Amino acid sequence: MDHFTLKNGVLHAEDVPLDAIAAAVGTPVYVYSRATLTRHARVFRDALSILPSVHIAFAVKSNPNLAVLKLLGREGYGADVVSAGEMARALAAGMPAGDIVFSGVGKTGPELAAGVEAGIGQFNLESEEEGIELAAIAAARGATATAALRVNPDVEAGTHAKISTGKAENKFGVPYDRAAEIFARLDGLEGLSMRGLAVHIGSQIGNLEPLRAAFGKMGELMRDLRAQGFTVSHMDLGGGLGVPYREGESFPSPSDYAAMVAGATQGWDVTLMFEPGRVIVGNAGVLVTQVVRVKRGIEHPFVVVDAAMNDLARPALYDAWHDFVAVHPTGERITANIVGPICETSDTFAMARDIDAVQPGDLAVFRTAGAYGATMANTYNSRSLVPEVMVDQDRWAVVADRIEPATILAAERVPDWLD
Ligand code: LLP
View (cartoon, rainbow, N blue to C red):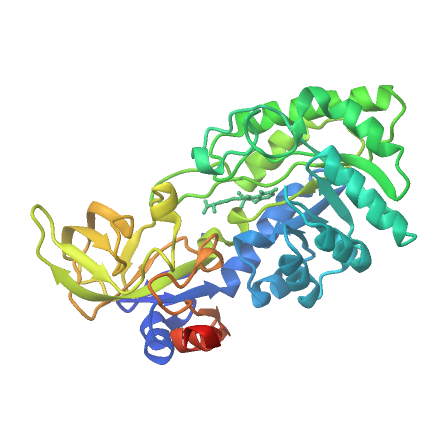
């Protein structure tokens, strides 16, 4: 459930008509609903409360906006970060360092050092090499870094290939069959305290079976390690739960997920850690855009909007579907291709789609754009970096400014020897 609904014929975010935001801030613009974010955070947390001991680390990559992180921090969420930049955001939002998990396959030496100095709660190691480096960095500072070993369980997540992470050929984690010996070697290192295992098999997962299979394999590995005398007190089960993008689509709910986890982890006697992203923020945001032009096509018209693949990359990258609805729907429908202004064919949001009829100048939204939307935006074609707004009942605020092309141009230099 979200709070983007028609009221008196106008699409609102909570109690704010989206045309009011567009008039004040311009388009394209991302709009988040505080009530939806809060609701999703609570529903997920409450669903997991059937488990004995839980830590939830929001996957910052899905929506790193400071206001979003602040809100989630207040709901008791920690953060899953994958760069020093994300770590700085989580800390700036007031999340305790101890509640932060540092993931990522390519953490650099300086990033590991920054994490140790900040007192990050858990490093999820993606290789033995990384563990050796982290141990040395921590030992040199007289510190001990707490870590889990990310394991690649070789499970097919059943999602888009570009967002699957748990097959043997993927770059993430250590191979399942070598995990126990790597854990054993890392556990002996000065500067490192190994406390658990981590797994994350992919994103936008709509079927719980691959997750159940992966968790089952992780449970076996945990028991092996314990049988060898190692302490395993934390198991990080990652994120990945999908959300509906198309009206009428149905996905496992947080409570279905929690029930599956409860079954798969029965008797584990650990703190279970989770790294949800999309399920918390996906349906809490829309991208508001204006129709620039409606151009005659061969079979269907092209609705050219002022948002583009640089603002919302998911359709171009993963052929992702985002529902497109008018801010002032008339009830009339058309079949159209929805495209942005960027000079490549991948800047296509939809082909032959049945949509609300729109005219040049009309406003519309791409729904379910709160996750992997603004965070993946860029400035290709020297366009602005898209701004973000948060709505709270009848008030709203810009939570990220539009970065104008002139600001980006001002950071560029022409060397003397070219002048
Ligand atoms: N934990 C780890 C280690 C991850 O790599 C990810 C996502 C998550 C947690 C959060 O997964 P979620 O709960 O959001 O599914 N840009 C793509 C999605 C990439 C996901 C990357 N990793 C998209 O727009 O679909």
